[in-house]
Length: 569
Image 1 (cartoon, one colour):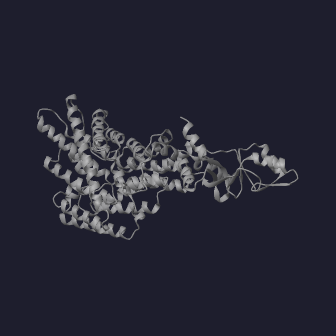
Image 2 (cartoon, helix red, strand yellow; image 1 turned 30 degrees about the vertical axis):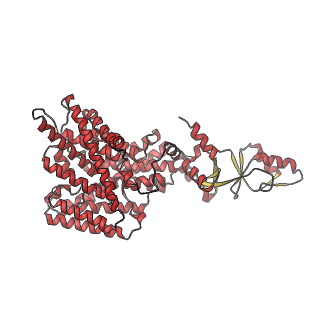
Image 3 (spheres, helix red, strand yellow; image 1 turned 90 degrees about the vertical axis):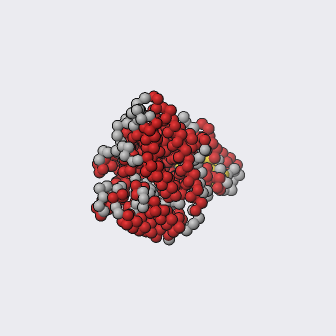
């Protein structure tokens, strides 16, 4: 191994050095944000350039015939893109990211990433009632994963780098860097750790910088001045949280209901969704595309009550259908649209109930968005931080906490429902919500429990070589090419009893030998434990580079158990 490669491994790939990981996270954030920028431009530029509309979300300005042709053409193209692909190649979106993080240590295939980019562009260009954030999360996580794979990063750091890509993607999509960090740790990594915060924060900040350089400093929504005028509004905010919780529950149940058609051919699942979207959009074109223009109108109280109610029902139907049949676009945007509709309805209702009270429709619309996001995605802290960043108003924190927490409790404790992403993965036997022990082992580098006092030796040793090795007082001897461990005491005993022999054969002398498997130094403790259980082993030989036979140490099942019991605080 060249000195440069050795330095690279010691600083970046096979170490716990934070500076190296921070540098890779910064690169991930920039590349991920650049990819998200291209993704957004690929959607927005064609719509604005080739159609007489002012913004890429203004499908209402198109004629019915144009909207219909776009929808039908996009739906047909998506079915053709996916029809001949094997099932594992079709997997995209947030559910795909969570599955790869749980079962594959954050290794995301490049082919699925490319497919996600093109499929989401087609879906959003054609006006399907979906969001861009889910695909952005896949693209961001995939960027981090690919950079980590190319640099041969250790598994516990590869997962952090994938989460850093997610943070950058969320930051670039909403211009909310803090929410990007919290979402990545709350939903993707499923933990908060000091080791993960630094690289993820760097990636999120770099994503926000790229986004602001291209799209400006405005957030995804045009939020008016929002305030809670009196503490008398607290009971109504609590009621809003309950209503959002009930709507979030209905949304998750709808996803479960539509999953029953998952066995149907692709042409029926996606073709039916396209035709349903076409039928609804004939009278409600506001449901087409991401719908943030309609959300902005709702924030300013410019959508009438009946229209908002109809849009709520339509978006619930189409978005839950798309989420259930693995349509290659996101559900986060639609969930926020639904929350805005619920909050807008509650805001208008408050004016009718108390016409003399200066209630703000936009205030309740914003709270509804946060409450729905927190309840459906099981990400209450990310939703609250998003509210703070989108409004740039600290007065939103207290009412936001109330609405988000109440809505989340209704879904999780009253109806005992998981997040919508877990519902999407409910039929996948490979996915299980990790236990705290599994989570800890998966985030611990194998080197932290490894025994380093092991010497690799040849099967046959001369007396002089054996004596020299014993002077170094190792704990174990590894017999090269035999994957077998032997105690030094057995060699010492053989030297004493076989006084006339010039050499010692380590495979024939009386000894308690331990068979061992092989594992890479890139692995984590959960990798090691899984391998031991699969092959009924007690020991593993850890190699820095198995191709070059660079031995690093050994780890046993007892070592892992001791590390778990006495791990550093």
